[in-house]
Image 1 (tube, rainbow, N blue to C red):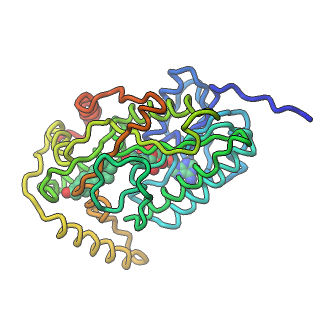
Image 2: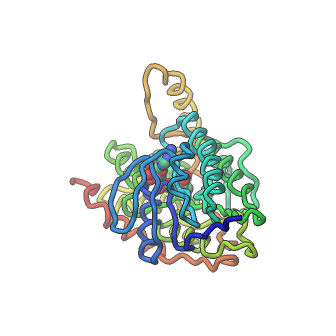
Image 3: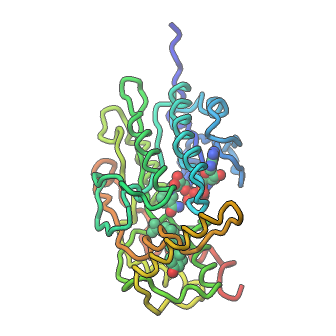
Length: 345
Ligand SMILES: NC(=O)C1=CN([C@@H]2O[C@H](COP(=O)(O)OP(=O)(O)OC[C@H]3O[C@@H](n4cnc5c(N)ncnc54)[C@H](O)[C@@H]3O)[C@@H](O)[C@H]2O)C=CC1
Ligand SMILES: CC(C)=CCC[C@@H](C)[C@H]1CC[C@H]2C3=C(CC[C@]12C)[C@@]1(C)CCC(=O)C[C@@H]1CC3
């Protein structure tokens, strides 16, 4: 019987490597001496030594061509939560992830590191120092979360030491940093429309915002510690900055850093949440005629008005994780990276 020659453990692929997190991950992997193949529906940059393969992760044959000589795969592709398209989320996050697993197994990949989300346990109620053993949300607030739950389950269930195929899931929360297309741009857009005057609730709710380099660090540690005899096999790990901050203090620091006023007036949480549900219902009903994307979705209001911060004790114990960039430094670097979004520019 022919024996399969194992590719070097430093040959990896990043599915979703053109995105915000994916690109930071690729850059760090290259710095660490990995040889990297990116698989994504779009190519948005070029780095010497990185090969790009444009394709849809739902296409197993296209994936197979890229994965056949890698030993490690990072899967950090997903449609944006803002698209609110249930069919697309199911197709990519659930069915597509099944095809990623099959392609990995057929190609002889040994390790799969999934980017999940801490939100898989969030259903709108406060979470304080949440551990990984919290149950998955029974009633997820949006389709994105619903499919991230299914995605994480199927990846963790696929972990199989006998088949030499190991999996682990990283659950980041509130990723921010240079080139993020979501957090700072949405915040600035809301401020420019004059809608950032209000604090939802009493403004004391604590939240994790995690600097992208810490998230990258968590992914690489997970990959390097994932072995058949390690506790990581088939488990999920929170990766945060380990410095929960008031949601509204974080928003205010970014806004003030970019020259905008911090929000000042308080609105009751229940009122804004109710309005967001109503708006969501109306826009869903109108969707066949007109595609309106409201700024205030129920999920966003829940994220802005409740406590949701998580323990990363398990990652510290099992893989020696510690954040590499502290929160204040991370905010300063992020603000400095968006000169084009400063007030008046
Ligand atoms: N940004 C955040 O705050 C958080 C993100 N996550 C997860 O982190 C991962 C990365 O997120 P971001 O970098 O923020 O998103 P992003 O939107 O910047 O990157 C996602 C990438 O996936 C690619 N992609 C989408 N559909 C694809 C398909 N069918 N085939 C191949 N590639 C496809 C996109 O082209 C994009 O480059 C996602 O899985 C997301 O669920 C989890 C928690 C928080
Ligand atoms: C902590 C965490 C999981 C953050 C994820 C990123 C986004 C969901 C947030 C980034 C900017 C936020 C934001 C709002 C909600 C959550 C975000 C989109 C508001 C829409 C909340 C209501 C407001 O008053 C305006 C906010 C603008 C910024």
